[in-house]
Image (cartoon, rainbow, N blue to C red; front, top):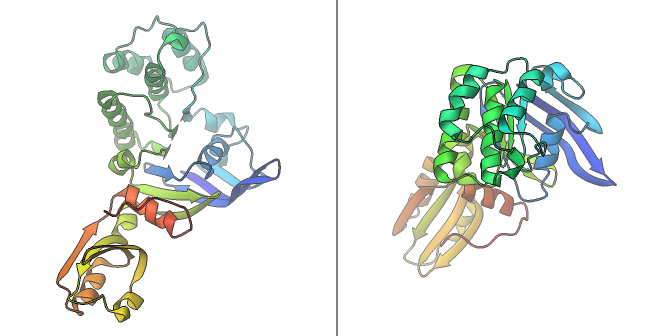
Length: 299
């Protein structure tokens, strides 16, 4: 389990993390999303023990992370910016990992050759970015980690390899109870793999829920009335965004779907449709309500 409590981190007077708290349960897949500069990579580097917080506390499996070798031996961090020694082949890197991580599995390493299909004698630094990312997963999965922390993990991978990588990660979640924290801008992909999501903005986690709860509380509603939409009805709805196209009004509304439908129906609309939102739409409209600028994507 990952537990972040009231963490503050500043750089040259800039508060990159502002009293941030989040919790990732054991065996869950947690998606961390937010605009550029929200603090996602900074909190990840604090969780991994690369940075130490100015204030607050970070624990994994109830132990502090910073300078804790025992905990770090159970963590794999795959960054968007990978580093490999310039003269090392894949096999050389595997030998190094096997000396660092006590649960390293050579059997798994051999089995992964059938998935990644890259010659282990090749120098990693001479591979393409996508192939280097494959090597990072190949090695990381073989450490049999308790915790995987992934920052833009499948960027640069082709669609087939993306599916293979997610299949391997989710298999470890199901079979071994691996805890996974993912930061990504690919919200459509996160929607397929995450069970919890946290939205970051200006160094804070502004929303943190299970994916079902997050999507279940915000709806896209399309409605039309014979005359104008009753002002009384508008006053009773929690509207995040609204636009009109001809006689049809499209709104993003927060609340219980059945209660919204019952309320609007009582005003006898000519058209009433309530549609589920994608995670991407939830992200856009939640942040839109906090002043983050976005283009109109309703239509």
